[in-house]
Length: 206
Length: 323
Image (cartoon, rainbow over the protein chains, first blue to last red):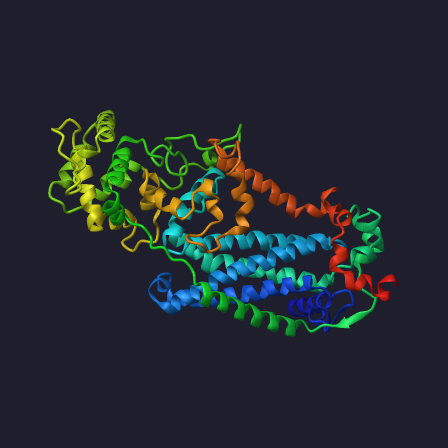
């Protein structure tokens, strides 16, 4: 009797992601540095961005221009963007100096870079939908860059409706999926070994 | 990373079998969310966020009618940026290219814009100003050569003598028919703009509920001084690292610093294909960042500059690290 597809998926998932590997309560002893906090701080800022973004979404794109509460929620959204990028860039630099791609961790590195690029694109569309002077100016300046590379034929920065849909509906979903895959890969592969304990890397073999 | 098979004997690719420590990931995440929430709410309470009101055709006509009038004449003459842009708006320009690389041209006209018609004549045709439809008919029934001659002649006259625009009522003076319907068209367009009707006419041609602001933004960007002088005031020009700035003193998209950097230096700050150059350079650099683990010299930098000794200083001073 053949095993059902559902059972196959369950078996494969549990094999690849056993719960104690997905949510371990211990870490290698070397995981003891301030730099490790910047990954989780980036996730925390992302959570705050989604939360404040959902409130702005529910109330619509013009609410923050006419409401003190709306303006305050917009401020929280803006400052979390700044914090999100600050944390993420420190996290990225930290991973570079740790050569964190070692030991079959290229996919983890690559999803991190995709998350970085995806964040820049998502933030940019956010600036396009402020519906104020800043967004008007950014749109008219960005059009030349978009058009020169051919992207402008598909994504038009001057089309505010398109930018709203990209920023609110599509890009956070894609970014969220990339972040989930990135976190799963971090848990699957574990935290990279310190460089001095990696004799092959020290000897230039990897 | 030279050979996938060699990973079998590479300890860094295997599970850590050395000493471990207690680590509560969920507690760490919850604390991080609380810290970031407090930090961002505090920053918002202290510094708020910028919101400079959007400009409109009405504000343009009110604050700088000469600029609007000159831009409208330029649209009719086909001399503005949008009129001669090329793809994706029209075929009046070749677009940016480097040698055989011209993605702008390859993708063709996808957002058709006829600047004279879409930014001036068609909006005017929606007006209920007496005589406006006659002006539109006269313009449309004239040969393209004559249209351009009228508009160019009037543009020259207007450049020499801004007094053609009456300071008192911001109307273009009648010029004895030398320039065909052009002065009257500009007059009526200014009237539309001052009333706010032009903002609606430019955005509702595709749908009565507008979400696409391509036409008014192209018109504003074609302008000579109104739109760009506001941007200069807020340090938003490309030459002012504007891509990464925000209005006022708030931080903007500082993560675009490298993108903005290329626009500050030659040859990119003066090249007619500057945007394409910067786009290609940033594409190559992004690809290099992605593939950095495979690039021989770059992947060794963390070994040569041992910042890892600072990161793992506690571990390296632990006797367990020697085992």
